[in-house]
Every structure is written in C-alpha cells, then in structure tokens.
Image 1 (tube, rainbow, N blue to C red):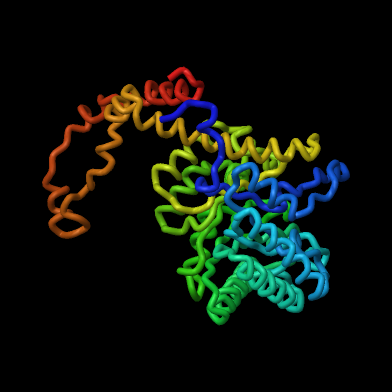
Image 2 (cartoon, rainbow, N blue to C red; image 1 turned 90 degrees about the vertical axis):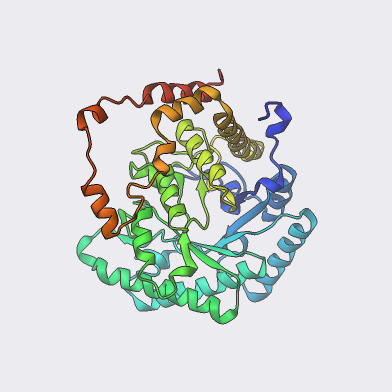
Length: 392
C-alpha cells in the first residue's frame, strides 16, 4: 500500500493509453460547434509521453485525413513515427473510422449496398496495414453505423451474415499478410443508430462463436456502452475474462439512461469504477488500460491535459484502494462471513458424473437451518463504502 502524493504519478509501465480522437476531441456536439482548435497528432504524442502514458491509439482518419494521397499519407506517417521514436510511446491498438463519412450512412459492413460494404472492407484493410506498420497488435472494431432505425429496411439475420463475412475477410487478410494482430469487437446498444447490431458483450460473445477464426476475435468492452444498457460493466468484463476474450478495454464514465457521455474515468460511478479496477488488478490482466473518453466541452488545451492526468490518477488511486481492500482486516473478516472462500468449493466434488449425481441425491439438507444463515452483506458493503470515502 502507498499513500504519498507522488505514488499516484502515472508511469509508462502502468500501460495507460489514449486515442488521438480522445485528446483531439474538439468539443463539438449535436447542438454546438467546436470549442477547441485542431490538435496536431505529433503534439499529442509528446504531451502524452510527458504526462506518463504508455501509448497512443488511433482511427485511420485521426492520423491520415480521409482522401489523402499516398504521398500525403507517407509524409504524415513519417512525422508521427518520428514522434513515437523520440518519446518511446507505443501504438498498441488501431481501428477504422467507418461512421463519419456520408458513404456509411446505411452502415459499413452491414450496408444494404454491396459496393459500400466492399469499400468499407477495403478501407479496413488499408487501416490494418497502417496499424501494423506502426506496431499495433490489437485491432478494434466498433460498428458505429451497423444498425437501423427503419426496421423494415433490413433483415437482421442477413445483416449478421454480412457482418460475419466482413470480420472473416479481415481475419483472412491479417493471416495472409502474416501480421501479429487480433481483433476486438466493441459492443454498443444505440447511438448513432437507433438500434445497433451486437449491442452488448453477450451479443458479441455469441457472434464470435459463428466466425471462421473465432480464436482471432475477442472483445473491447466499454464502460459507457454497457452502462447505457443499464448493465453492470464489471460483470461484462468478468465474463469476457471468463471466456478469455478480453483483448482490450475502454475506460470512461457514464450515467445510466443517458446518451454516450464519455466522461473522464471515475468522474461518475466511482464505486463501479473501483470494482472494474479491482477486477483488472486481481485478475493480473496484462492488457492496456485505455481511456476512451473526452474532455469537457468547456476546456481549452490545458484542460485536455488535466483530463488526461485525471484519468490516469483516478485509476492509480483506485488500484491503491484495491490493494487496501486486500489488506484490510475488517474487510477480510467480512468476506469470510459472506462465504467468499466457500464459492471456490465445487458443488459436486465428483464432477458432472453418475457418481456426482448419486452423491447429491444421497445427501440430506436442513433448508431451514441453511435459510437462517446471515451473510453480513450490509457490513461488508459499508466497509467498502468507507474505504472509498477515505476513512479506512
């Protein structure tokens, strides 16, 4: 455990990453224009490195403007690579923007027009090349326009066929090129489409089972997206871990029932944020702690860097709380009362066998006595509250 102020200073070895689209967000929303000027990706690299981040991620269009010539692309990439080399910042993940351009208004991988689908796949191939060139080994797929408003306009079953076809094509492309890269699907229930395909972690897990190379595809769950659905993000991450499908993660903050807010990590739902951090730290997960959030629209450039520091410091503080949780004598005693350790005992020590079935059938129980047991959840929950409030 550590409490000094300096102990919460982010370090590269903590594997904190940000997207160019996060720090480069200019504050535009559906009701107002941009409030900040364009932020040069090279400056973003230098500032993120200065503040203790490990890496920077990007959509293809975040780095290379849509429609750029080959010469323009090469010039941009050369400057960006030079900044990476100067700072030591890494590019762990890349992705494709298949949602901003008008051509994708009816979808990308699931558009009704096969020419649009083919263009979307080609654009993704090129973005995969760009990511591989800069060292990315995770490729995130967020289907921002994969969905509908007019239910009659699409057959969802056929749309999922087309979605599967596109993901299979991308996997085949990576295999053909010999890239060390895997894919992570990012679920979201709605926005910008009225209803989106693969809306939750559970939907995406089921979809992966139908792919040609399911081992190459996992998940990139996002705090805000599961919370928008009214679901428990910690449970979603735990299930992804249980399936060995947590390939990447997006950390931010969100109020349930709202539009996609993408607030600074921990700025809302601090208790939920704590349990996510505790899960990641307890599991020993080795992936990136990626912050897919946006600075408030009220901020100037200094506010952007305050936002970056805040995301990382909050994670560090909550990781310290998780360590205190493990060493707090009262909490550990309360966990015994709750029976946490008993959860590890198999229901059938003989397994799902005839002997195991016979063993359960031959057992006798006293339901009344079992029902009288108290589990002490009120005390345990209060102890966690006090830990988070800083009085333990």
